[in-house]
Length: 168
Image (tube, rainbow, N blue to C red; front, side, top):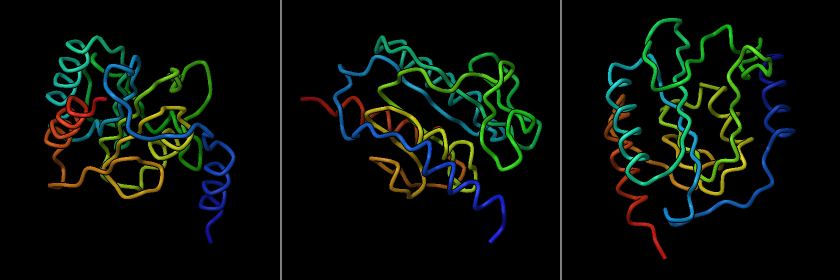
């Protein structure tokens, strides 16, 4: 087993949130964190959809665009995370120069479709959000949205429809 995989497993085990998760109605959501793939072509449009959805619902959100190829999204709707923002085994650094990830969020959404992105997986595992949605099968997420490859915008549209329908 590679040394980085050992450190990743240990990091996930140590940083795992103890907060119970599950479906919560949208009226109980006040803060959200969203991870998108900044290297995908639809990044700009999905970030506009995210901004419009959360603005209408009155939910504060923080979006992060992972640009792990070094290029990609360059707009202002999301905090950008580059390879230099990650440590040697893929976790987001905790320095003053790196954007803060934890925001006491009630909702965590990962639109990245690959479990290979350790930064997003670690952020999801350590998040204290009460409702977690993602695009790949993992015990971390309460709901997994599957669909066409590379379709962040379609996945967010499905998530936004689901969130508006979940109510008590």
